[in-house]
Length: 357
Image (cartoon, rainbow, N blue to C red; front, side, top):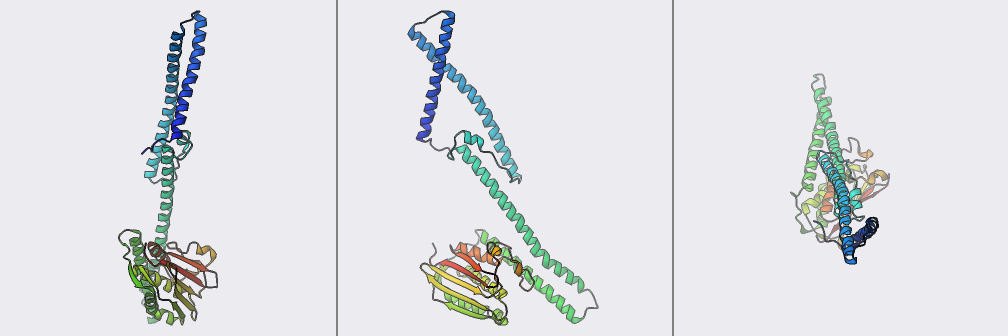
């Protein structure tokens, strides 16, 4: 809806109207003066004043009519461009950008409704373009993540048809197929989790619980993994009670712990700490793995993003674990950060409010 005009707007409009009338009356005065001289007639002062006034209004009306035609033509062109831009956007062309020149001429400030309309449509087109790029990148990543294990499964399934394979080779091929199937299953589960988190179908159900006890139980649940790699697990967990969705937050801690176990070499160390700082619970998960390069730190929480060192079969992953952890943390009004240097391990820090706002 159009807002109420400001006082300065009204003042400038009045100045424009009275200034235009004054100029038209001056023009009428000199024009009729020339006519009087030409026809050699000098009317009464009152009649002359009335003639000047009427003629001035007529000249002013003619000028307004001419200016109105010009503005109407420009306005028609503007709306035609606007409709064409919306039509192209509806067809998927998000590279469109409307020139706000028309709205700018009507008033050089952002309060102009036409300027705001053009600005909003340009922002909408830019946001839709960004979303389309993310969608295409998402499809490309999903296709890649699904295509790689399917290619392996297909190749080794064909190899199993060879009757001359010995039992050891056959078992090795079957193990690879099983591993790739598990990888596909995890990818499917993670995609479903992200889809649910992005929708309104998975609301947060906060409740008060002991965060330190939750971390202890999850560390013990992962014991076979870190014991199998002879990793030294250090835990410094202060007694902290939070108000959060316990099931959702367990996914955050599981993802971070599994991530640390995956990248920590045999005989390495993982340190998990929990402390309370003012109204925040601070959880840190640090490992002695290969670390993360500086260029990867900025994108580590992006979906499907994987640093180069993790692109191997022994450290396989879909690149969704940290994205899920980040999404859940944000849903709890918290934050998750990472600090790392190549060769010096990595430390993930989760800040979680003690009371849900």
